[in-house]
Structures are given as structure tokens and as C-alpha cells.
Length: 96
Image 1: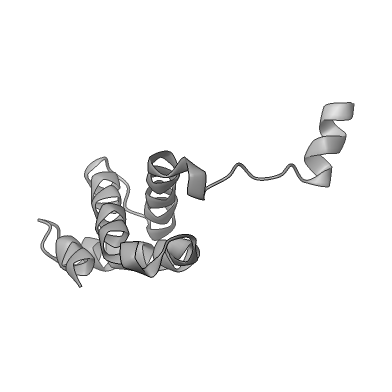
Image 2: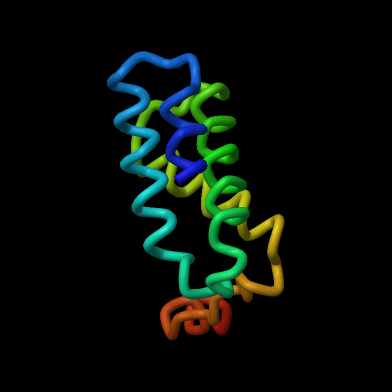
């Protein structure tokens, strides 16, 4: 798969590549069903690039990389990532 090769080919050490792949796989598991299978390869590549960008900006935690990747995808495809509904706790705090 090209997306994984994008990450593996980046100029990072093996530990950073491992974290980036871990973040990529976790993020992809969360969003794959939001896209048509025909789109998957292109979307995976875009996610990989977003995670590499987060690494270059200094993130070195798999969860931070996952969140950065998901955020980039949400900005790129807002129709696929509707805003979350407020929880009952959030609604109550706004009432007070």
C-alpha cells in the first residue's frame, strides 16, 4: 500500500516510523467506513501525509499523531466529519 510506504520512506528513525504507522493504523480504523472503498487509497495517502506533517511539527506521541491526522482529515472532508453532538454534561454546563 502506498500510504504505508509514504510513512516508511520518510526521513525519520525507526522508532518515529513505528509511532507514525501506529497512529496511521489507529486513525484509519476510525475513519475508513466514512469513505467509499474506491476512495480508500487516495484517502489513506492523504492521512499518511497529514501524520508525517505532524511528526515534522514535533509530535512524537502516537495518540497526538492520530489526533493530528484525524483533525487534518476533518478539515479536508468536513462533510464526512459532522460536529459531535453535545453531551448531556456539556448541555447542562451551558444552562448554568
